[in-house]
Each structure stands twice: as C-alpha cells, then as structure tokens.
Image 1 (cartoon, one colour):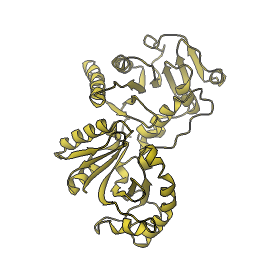
Image 2 (tube, rainbow, N blue to C red):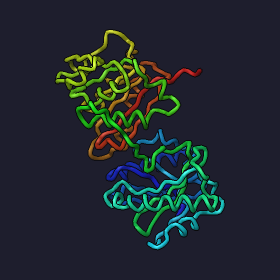
Image 3 (tube, rainbow, N blue to C red):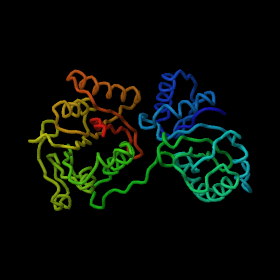
Image 4 (cartoon, rainbow, N blue to C red):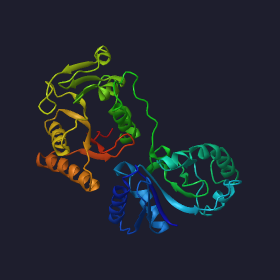
Length: 359
C-alpha cells in the first residue's frame, strides 16, 4: 500500500483527513483517505512518489490536526510472534536510503497503548538487525530519514519513513512534557507543549528567555502563569479570580483583578501574551489580533475552543478572521500557525508572532 500514515487524536480522524486532502490537492496530488472512527490514524492513499513529495513539501508545523506523518513503504499483516524483525526488514524496498533512527510506534488509543510493551521489547533487536543490514546508521543521525514501524496489532504493522527536517521530533508526534512543580493546574501542560512543539527549534532561544515580560489573560488559578515563571519571565496575571499564592511568592507575578478583554498594559514592552479563556473563539481571536495591531506584544499563544462539528472548517474560519483583522490594519511581517496539541481536547492552540529579523 502506497501513501501516508498520519497520527491524530482519536475522534479527530475526519479533521485530519480533510486537512491532508486539502494540502495534497494544493500540490496537485489527489488521493483518498481510509479512516476508522476513534482509531487515531488516517491513511492517505496515493502514489509512492506523490507521498514522498508531500512528505518533503508540507511542513509538519503548518498542519493543525496531524500530529505526525510518514510515507508508507510496506505493510505486514502476518507477523509471527517468534520472529517479527526479519519480515519487517525484508519488506523494506531496496532503494530506501539508510535511515538515521528507527521509531516503533502505536496509535494513541487504548488498544495502541496495550502494544507499547511490544514496541519497547522489539526496538533493540530491530535496531541491531537494521544496523547489521546497513539499513540504519550505527548511531542516530538527524540528517537522515527516520524509519517508522507502526504496530496496529501484535501481528500487523505499517512500515515507512519520514524526513528529519520535516517531522515532529517525537514518536507519534507526542512530546514528553514536564510542567512546573508549582503549577496549580494541569492546563500548564498545554503551554509547555506549545513552546516545545510550535516554536521552531532554531528560534526558541530568541523567542523564550529569562527576563522577558509576559501577560496572561484569564490567568486564574495560574497554570499558564507557572510555565512563564519557570521560564524566568515577569508576568502580569490578569483575572478577577485568585492566583495561586505560591506563584505570587516568586516575586515574578503581578496580579491585576481586571477583565481580560479590556485590560491593556501601561507600556508596550510585552514579549509574550498568552490566553486560555473559555470564551467565544472569534472574540478571543479578535482580541489577540488587536493586541498585535496596537503594538503591545511580539508573540501571542492562545487557545480557541472548537465546535462539535465542522471543526476543521471552524479553525480555518478563526485563522481567516485573524488574518483579515490584521490585513485591515495593514499589519505585515507576522506568522500564524495552529496545532491540535496532545494536551488539547476540544480546542486548538494558536501561535501568532512577529517574524524575527534576519541576522
């Protein structure tokens, strides 16, 4: 089977399929999607050379509902419990370039997680055999493609590759996140993941550093504020509710008991604006755009809630509303992306930022 395998959150297969079909069509590739409800996996069927073209050209950072994707080169459905490694490697095409790493994966479902022990057990043997056959470099190399083995059951797997310059640098697209110990809520994991996933690695040091000024709109009880504090930022936490006392004791947080929609800082020296308010998404989108138009911030990271249906179309509408508002104000030199993160549920995280000046 030729095509692409795409990881997504269970229940969002339709959005993932709609997105890859639209992006593929923009490249002149017209395939079809195979999905099953709540499978956390989409198969985009197309020609092998077309799948490779998409994997090179469609940036993973530009996709919303696709966590990770790779080009399928083989499918094995009769793996023996006695020896899975030999048939997996034998299925690889002869023209596959030597890969720099191998990832054994499952889908992000209960059935998939039950296969995690198998993945951990088989990886060392698979790696050793692949190195012996010169299918894999002796040590991991980031300038080579990554070999993917996606187990769908104990006897079935999809095999493929992704380009290291255009994939999420984590198996299945799921990063390991550590939220600050002082975080009073789990919501901080969303911002911590967004910093790790949505900011290009080469820009991270310039975008996020100690001493920056930040504003957290709708901050109570302080989950997102805790992430900013952990990064060494000085935070204006805006909320009529209470902020966790432990955060206030850091000396890095100033609490403003005001409405997040009407608050504006006295000075236009804010590097980061973050917002996780449970409000109408278009209203939040317009607010974020207005802060940019008024020159208050350089980066904005915020969540927009999703409707029950037509979620992919809704995200496109939200992003279009931001672009339209910025265009009307003749604001240029910005970048706008959105991701349905691992820690997001019925929401997406949006990242609006000024382009960095070239050195």
